[in-house]
Length: 629
Image 1 (cartoon, one colour):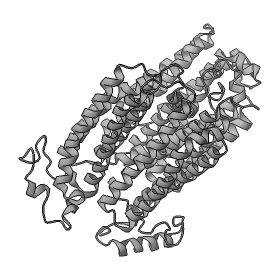
Image 2 (cartoon, rainbow, N blue to C red):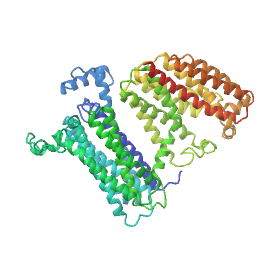
Image 3 (tube, rainbow, N blue to C red):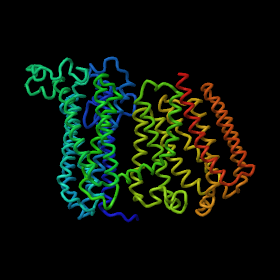
Image 4 (cartoon, helix red, strand yellow):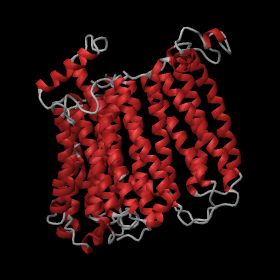
């Protein structure tokens, strides 16, 4: 068991919950921008059930109910479009339910820690009350047909809940650290900046809810005026007159664009004060990011206004607003502490990212993106393209995380992994890692199943199960062919991506699969030649351990020939064909040189080149596909 204090353990759970709330808020913005918020007119049930329809008749019944409730919204809408919108809203509700369940588990866990509960009771109970209010507001949003004022309050409440829980995570992560003298005054400036940002976020919710971003699309003036006439800002055409505050588009936009400068002033004031103070590593990082994020957010706000709020820019604007809110909380919290002990919450975040093996994930995402570029149907749909890649991230993260969970004791004995992998280094508790990666897997399956099709969801589930259980637990410790067979899991990204985009399979994604499949053995065998003693010590039967170096080098050359031959079967364009010949020829040459007696450390050179080869090959596939299209 990892020796972590109760406060630090609870901080880790609160950090995980904060990540879930972040995902929930950003997805809520996507729900709004995609027009999916009313696709499920019932709340909390859907035609008397918590589950979505599973039959064509069920889908048709829900669609008919939607058309009857909102005839203006459904004029000309197809069932397929409705199913997509329904899935987007349903996933939002699923995330909200998951947040509630995780929060309840944290609350019950905190009750069993007397010292921690003493300082956490008040904020956690406040959060519990606000989560209940938020659930009610969610129902009101549906029942009141996305009323702008309720939407803005719903958004603001989400930010407040996040602030309470994230602040408490930061506080518990600094358990026992000395407070700076006069820290209350130091934090006051930060709290003012946070409050100003929260007001701006709520006003942004009103801008989105009323469509205020679609009027007076000029800057810096509002139309022809620096300040519109009072008769326009506070007109008697709204009843009651106070309804100007949440219905008058010009007033709402005027307030939002000029309050941004109040926010900027408060943030700059905080930056100036904080720069004079010694901060922890995470405090310094957040402080460096604050000014950049502020400038970016102002530019995005102006761009949204001038371009009449394109959906992709609206999503980015929302995400950057949240990033500003996040870094302000970190800076404000950290100015209260002397940086004597640096228990970085950011390092815990990095541990969860490292659990997903990000370097491997980049290659996985690259192969998936190449498949989408070749397929071509999503070129005009940015959200679907990036959502598929996000689903692939969660799929690979789950598989890689489960692999680390099952092999944590082996990793702790191997020189290559004992100082790189968080579980091997005992930087987190295994059960926390397990909860995180399972959540990633469930999220991936639901994203593919609800937003795209269940064939891609099945492929994602199969990839996770194959790699985590069949390969890691059974194949890897039993046969020197482990990486040959197990490499199929790492090659599945093009299949999953193509299936998500089309609902079918074709020859092209299988070619991409085969390229990665035959690339994997020479790539890993080159590495295995360098760390053969490590594998022997932990009794993993890799090819060099069982068959020796010469046979391994021979197999690397054979697989290199097959890899290059398969890569030439893919028809993209002349650029790709030239690159495949040059890159492949160099791969074969390096493999041949290794076989003919190059020094052992030459295997490391081949290993590094294999990464360059695959990256360059798939980048060129994407470039050539873009040119061809």
